[in-house]
Length: 195
Image 1 (cartoon, rainbow, N blue to C red):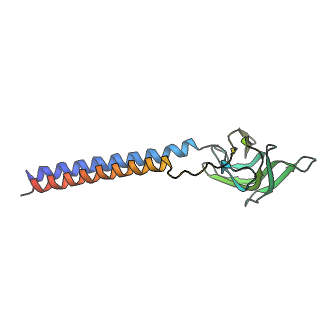
Image 2: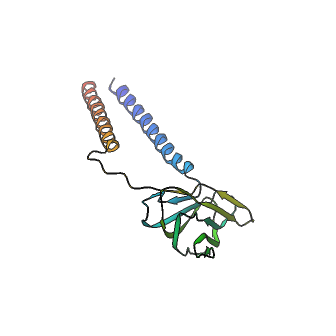
Image 3: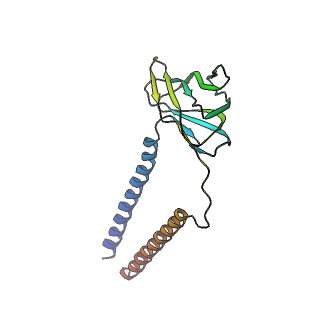
């Protein structure tokens, strides 16, 4: 009787461990797939705030990524662009000296790897600013992305109690109580089965 209870307990632990592993892998895989396009970070800034932006450019091609061009909308005033190792940085300006685009060329980023490019700037007004990214690849092909955006808005006023934080705290407490009750039940049950 004791051996069967122990075997049953070990089988349940193994199933639970496998389920936890599958859940963790799914959680890790989903954000990676969802974020696989040219992105700008941060994606929200306050009007008039000086910001260091990072452009994330994942290589989803089977060819090496050799460059990135980024168009800059009128509401975003670029101060400077950072050099990225292995790439030549170029700033494209209109005659009025407003930066209209940034270009990083001549690099070699392997497939499935991520390239990071940086620039500093100031966002004017409010609303969503749409940038356009064009990735260049070793075989001469390009890929157009309209996904890099930045929302220019005043930060929300801080409330005395943030409802999302409070909700997460309550959910965590309930989960902890359920796990504690389950462990307590299993320990108590295991003591009754043992001689």
